[in-house]
Image 1 (cartoon, one colour):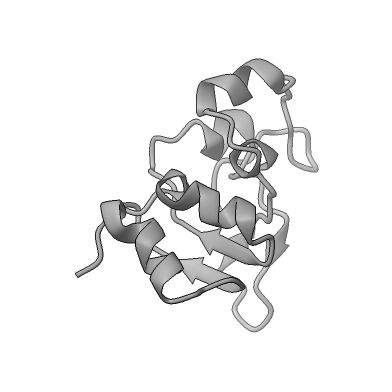
Image 2 (image 1 turned 60 degrees about the vertical axis):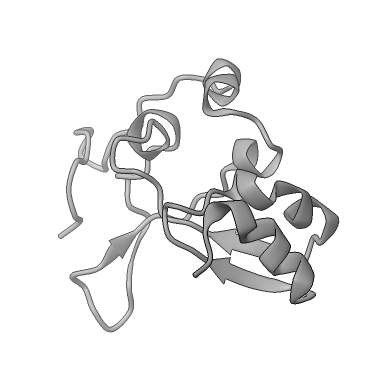
Length: 115
């Protein structure tokens, strides 16, 4: 069984240098940060915690930008979190980002799925 302490060694021992590693919340990017920096073609896809400030306050993740073709019940937002890629902590990110109030097309804040 792989745990967060062996995350980086798993990548190194298996010579993984490109692709996308999809993990659970127990495997933060920080546990293998050096590998992601050394190999620019190696990426990660991690879920974020429900109470993360990145969801609404920092990256407006509930302001959906699209609907999945073929299944209108699935909405999404694609967002590149530069702070995470550059190794900043959430508090460092918060200090750098401008505060924005994004609204929906009718001027009302969206808080749920688009219809």
